[in-house]
Image (cartoon, rainbow, N blue to C red):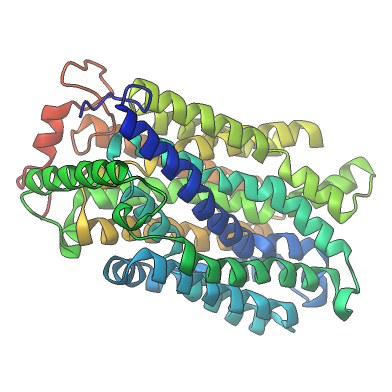
Length: 471
């Protein structure tokens, strides 16, 4: 099948199959992701709305508690994804979701810093493998040329988590006294229960492969199965049969992609955990007092444009063929904008600049995740995707901790945000260097491509050369 083929150009059976996957499977997995991201970032909403005061947390303690989640998450990320590859996504993703829902529920009754740290660590252990598992699961349902669109639809859940989740969290916090709980405790209860319910439903709703999906016609099942099998066989041949987990760990391309992802996640979580606190500071700037619902609505402002930009940016990447600048360009925009937010001069200008940062991060991420499965398959894909997410999520620990600690040391957010900008700039540089050195194919083009930031089909074959990449 032609690399430049879009859904509109595809045969009718392909169009109907991709459409059904987009409408029947992706929204449900996106709902799981929505709940996942809301549960892990709920602490950011609770902090300025009573939790920090009730538990007597400093900024550094809050940052550490926010970030310790990623230690447990990282320890089990790769083993969890290999288990998913072995036991099937339906069982494993359901198990993960019910497990984290139970742990998230316990935050309702946390009493001190030590308990908060333990629960955040256990939440990371419970959630380990969900995100890379979901990416791998969706990647195994559609051929590569349609994968960007599918992952974009899935990724829409993340900015929409804040668009919808921030006001929802604010509303739940306002229900102070419900069930005899403080507002921030009731919020933890309200976002934990859906994880358990949807996790149970997922056991029955998800299917591991197209052949098991009764909502596909026989022709659609055959087309998807054949297209995916041909793609897997071609990848194995191109990579000299390397499909083991060991291959992923030895691949230089996987490690460079891991460090690129680290920069995006560093910016994402610095934004997610501290934006509510920065908004809290607007009250002293303006002399206004915001209730928790208003704070939630303000927090959501950057993320709705981010969802819109992500949709059109990914659509452009699908139409033109993914180019290096589809990933490196947003990284540069984020690197410049995030420190500038602190010098915007007014709450409105600050939110406007932060909106640029959010748009930049979310524009890049769905396109980024199409890259690993272009040269990884089987157990290597499971391990490689998990490894990239693991290294990236080291930023999930370091970003809130470093931001909180440097804030306590300097008395402001200027230096921490410059650090965020620098890390994102490094991601942009690494993406350009990776493409120019012919280490990966960041585009979907034919062999006549002359874009100097693209790597053509011959270069991709060269990237598979054992002389050029550790095996």
